[in-house]
Figure (spheres, rainbow, N blue to C red):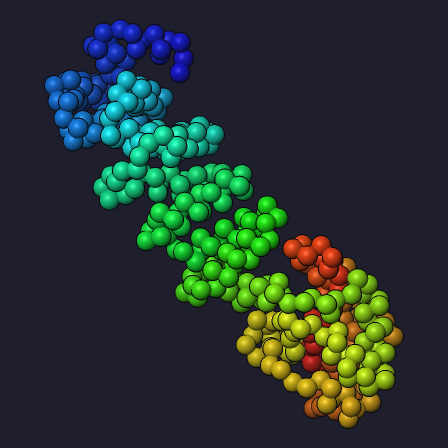
Length: 337
């Protein structure tokens, strides 16, 4: 608040009112009438909240958002026991261009004022949802999610809240809490995550991986590939199965999507290996890279004789010991497209 504005607050009531008489002649007349009614009926709480709303709205419409904020915050400061003060500060927060100032007022509402409902909407609920939109601090966001879940479960998409809460725990490296929240998210299959239609399948795969031993990965792609080549050459089914991913392993054609329900149908790889004379390329495919790799094999006793073994780097910071390792994650049937 500027010194000039502060100075205005020490003048008589009529002088202070004049500070807020702005806009077109019609707008000024409407504001004078509203202030006159306020001066006569200000002791009536129900009337006062409507009048303050109208005055604030007129100040905004006239193009004076700063005076609107001064008007409401001055009322809050001079009337600390007004039960609608949280609502007035909500109006102030909503009309700040600065995210920082808006956050300040939303946080002030939650910290210092009891909740109230205005036209069926909770002031605290409004403040929490706005803070989640404005706040980058992950630890604060966790607190806001918890508050929503504890106090406003009937107003939120619980599944979505758990999903974004889990992602925020991940940002903090709180892996046990993250996967606990992901498990709760899975209890709400009707929830849809915007832009991520396979969210439930993806989260289920990650939870299964988190709960597994993860002992089939290898630090070196070269070592993993050579181990599987040796197992194929010796027809060593035990070693082949030992290094097959035990979670989320897929076997599908190139045309299928990984999350196709038919991409993870179990079949006995060993039986195909033992009744075939399988061969493999000396080198990985040219389209292999630092994140994924392909090994062409052929001669399988199957109507589709060419299989590409698919390897990918493990992206799992929850376990630093295997994060960045490689796993044999699946099979593509048929010649590469």
